[in-house]
Length: 488
Image (tube, rainbow, N blue to C red):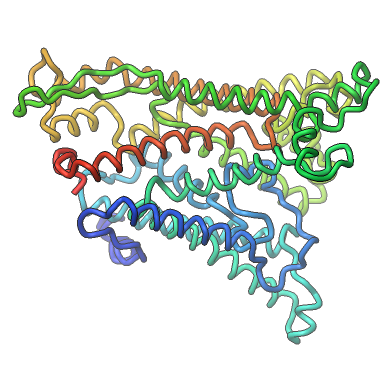
């Protein structure tokens, strides 16, 4: 008996959101999307019952714009378990260890069930050390005394709430994917990043001023002190304080580069085999795999750092080569070198903020850049292959739609060979480019302290969401196009 036969009774009974029967009107899709977004913001503002509010520490702070969610809320774990489960499945699928054919309906159900099961497991494994062992979500002793129960009982209540929050994120994502516009994961990332950017632009405490104009004064000048521009502190205030010029420039630059990269494409002409005059183009974008594979790379780094935090708190005799921590952050050792650069002052030693030696910082920057560039290319390849965006799957989609490449025989193998000239190369180049941009954005800083990866994700997802909304509107105005492209 294969593992599929043994696991099928469990995986096929996993709770799921039912797909709509037939076409969902565009206005209803927008309503579902807006409704889920409101629920997301609502849940991020609810603290778990029994939590010692104000005493928790957010390890995911530097990754929060990527993993979404909110520290000390029901959505503490954010989309982390979903991303981690995707990493595991992509690695197992890439090594062909699962033996699942995503074109087989039975295997599709098993794959989706396995992903849900992994999300449940990872959610529990992520929430447990935060509540019971890491001190990230401490229980309130006053609540335990008032209820007349042990502190462990209150911790169990907190764990249950955080676990349910992680499961809710999974099903909210599924609702948006099936009934709304875009994906829930992308929507939550946009919401998280937007909150940080808006907060970074509107700094109400700039130079002790109040009111609307103070916020804009803070954007331009930050906490710059007149007459100290040429000192180390003055230069730091000019470049890196909240609402500063360099961060605003970097944010604007990343926005322009991503939008431009999304528009750079190789367009392969197509014509309909049976409808004369019906022509189209298949775009192979420079960022063909999108920037979503970057979530996988950063989530992998976040899990490594989380493991280091747990070791630091629980292993008093942890060797120095593994990691030395100061105020909860690694300052040397393995966990320091694999910790990604998050802000300019972590690598610009000439400003006096970087505590490590220049050679240590150089190694850390090199490792971060290598991991993001190489990891971005590798995960982009996995993403393309597992989401049916590869040459073979694309050729079948074109064939099934009745389209063909002019001048070539109407044969999937022929179309696949044409696609192999572009898709693999563009996938690697695009994945490496996105990784490089993410590191550069982190090193230069962004408005609101948003990570470079988070900003890239938000801009790219917003751009794709705009394209999808435009496509939905087009389908709504021309129902025949839904039949042609199989959207019914």
